[in-house]
Image (cartoon, rainbow over all chains, first blue to last red; front, side, top):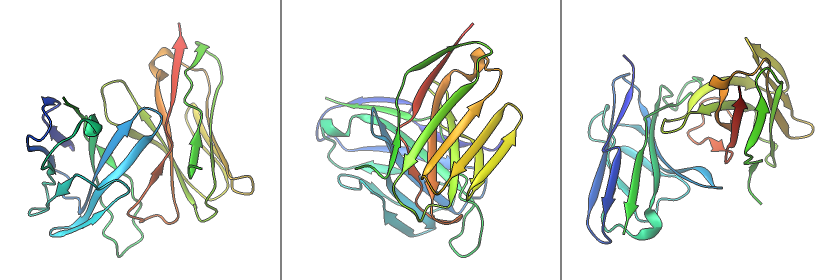
Amino acid sequence: EAQVTQNPRYLITVTGKKLTVTCSQNMNHEYMSWYRQDPGLGLRQIYYSMNVEVTDKGDVPEGYKVSRKEKRNFPLILESPSPNQTSLYFCASSLITGTGNQKNIQYFGAGTRLSVL
Amino acid sequence: QKEVEQDPGPLSVPEGAIVSLNCTYSNSAFQYFMWYRQYSRKGPELLMYTYSSGNKEDGRFTAQVDKSSKYISLFIRDSQPSDSATYLCAMTPYSSASKIIFGSGTRLSIRP
């Protein structure tokens, strides 16, 4: 089954304790992206990656890091989480390559609800 | 001002009603328009994908784009309780753009 898998689904942590949210897709997609979803603000893009070792900032990258060492995985790293990073996070993937006319139809994971105390 | 504005609702209608969900946008460069549906505790899933102005129909769903007014709509006919979800509009200037701008979502509830 084609899917985007995020782990963990729920996470409660304390300010300053480094954490990683994993994301994996089995569709051989080149494009992957991270979003956060907050009430009234919708989905805001944090980082995206067009291919292995190619990442770029989205609208709200501050306080986050990503890496893309393998095509299927795109972890989101919070080096020193703060309470304003409490949010619902989504990973997504798409088959766009950046050089063609593919449609950027994104497939989303089920989400990770993060609380930073 | 946000690039994409969407009424957050909640919107509650009786089963069988016609539902109209709307978004307005400010960037005239947007040409590709999408509607995503998001059930509670799930990720968004693509419902409709349209290009430029006009209508597109898929079963009980119709997506409408009016680029002159910078206004898009999603109509749901014969609404069902299973349509209860949050609906997000999304748009982008070209099909393979790496960035998609999402609306904040409208929460819809269909009463049996």
